[in-house]
Length: 399
Image (tube, rainbow, N blue to C red; front, side, top):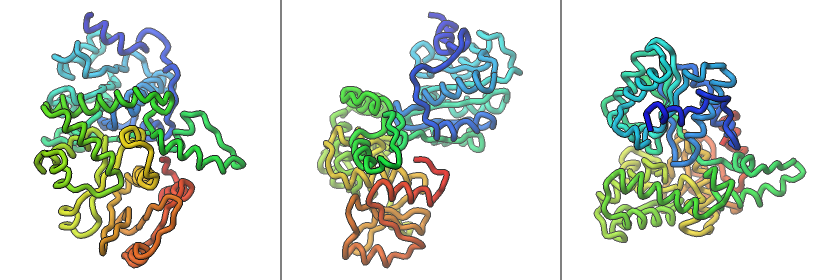
């Protein structure tokens, strides 16, 4: 197949009206992305594999063609992990695209590059394209390594947007569940379904365990084992299981190293790899710099469906705490540890949050909770309280 044929396969809007079939729009994701069409920044979409980055880019294409009336020939999408393009640089691909559509270097184009990290030195190439002007670039990656720019090629030229698994509101939308105020008593039941299923869009729609199992395997084997050339794939699988079992808990590098019979340095490297692929998030301790750096971190899962597939649906308190963390993630939460007791989150340095699913905080933890220096204190024990808390933090926040 010629390069031109490959490009036409990726860009059906060049030949026909383009409407994405059977796609549920994540409204808040689009609310965040649409204003970015008109600025010059390189937009980097990151997040867990199959969380919806590609669909988001194609919805932007649909918006450009249908709403903005952009000439379809001036919009180019390609996945950079395509085998037929693996010997081409980004600049070569763009050059071939301009030749294919007979576009001058002065013609403004919109370019969508999926899986950008498959390209060597992509930061420098994006900088060169950006500096030449007449181009708006959207990229995606399932690895946060795209955020690292050691040579600072994209400093001042990029904006990163992480697309997360579905929130509870989005889960209800994807399941086509509409609850009236009279049905408010049903929220708890549907919320527990969400706690169990998680927020991966395709899994929410089909709930096929094999799909989720294959997704986990893809991330572990392709994005971690193959990408980092790791020989001991069994250690990676066992490492993932250990982390899922410890959701909401502090993790000890030494204990994990002993359990898996690997070095502490290897545990540190594995943790970084798992963070980079968005499988987990690590939360540091609140306090002075040395306390933050030296203390254990707490671990949370990016998607609870994956966690529950590994551990079973148990410990609802930890599951709910994970949901609260995801809702607060953009506020850079830290946990508080004092006198042998832990308070779940401190956000913005002065708002204290303890999570108790359908329970109340009790002594002696209550005494510590009331005496820690904070501007406000909140106990969140159910979804409605979480929703109200987030709305009070930022009324426009949708999670």
